[in-house]
Every structure is written in structure tokens, then in C-alpha cells.
Image (cartoon, rainbow, N blue to C red; front, side, top):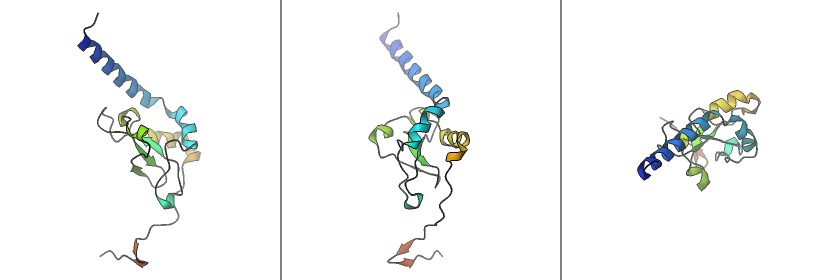
Amino acid sequence: MFTEEQNELVESAAEMLYGLIHVRYILTSKLEKYRNYDFGRCPRVYCCGQSCLPVGQSDIPRSNTVKIYCPKCEDIYYPRSKYQGNNDGAYVGTTFPHLFQMTYLHLKPQKPMQKYIPRVFGFKIHKP
């Protein structure tokens, strides 16, 4: 029915379409993973091991891998897991963490009370 080349093209298009549809319907399945710290924890000390969320830096398929977003410090990090780092970021989407926080307002963490003050040998670093 299809040639080998056409078959590969159809499979590639189907994979991309599935991934892009997946972006819009993943909120409910990710709640339990967020609570279990399956996506990892924030590496910053003042975030106190805050659970992170997956995020893509682009909605264009095959342009970036998935990263993790800390809702407390609002920063993006590379995931420690090699399995997460191989996933396409477009399949999670750039808006997932924000939609997740809007859906589950009670899970939104408060900003850290302490502020990081850079020091060298105990002395504060002065910024000119």
C-alpha cells in the first residue's frame, strides 16, 4: 500500500501528532507524580527540596529536550534522570507548569523567605 519511505513519513507524522495532543491532556496524570517527586527536586538550598515540574523550552518538536521547572524559585534546570533528559520538550509544552499551578492553586508554594547573599570567606560581596 505505502512505500517504505511513505511509511516512515506517516509514522513520523503520527508520532509528532500524538506528542502535540499529549501536551493538552496531561494535567490530571501529572498530579500524583508531582506529589511523589517523580520529576525531581529543586537543587537550590533555599527551595528546601521543592518538587519540580517538567517543562519544554520550545513548542517546536525536536528542538529541545525536557527540563524541570521549580515553582518556588521559578527557574529551569536540567533533569538529573537520563530518561527525562531524552524526552522531547515540545511534548510537555512551554505552558504546562503554569497550567498545572492554575489548576491546583493549593499546591503553589510560597516564595522563599530567606534571600541568598553571596559571600567569600564569610564576607559579603559588594556590587558596584
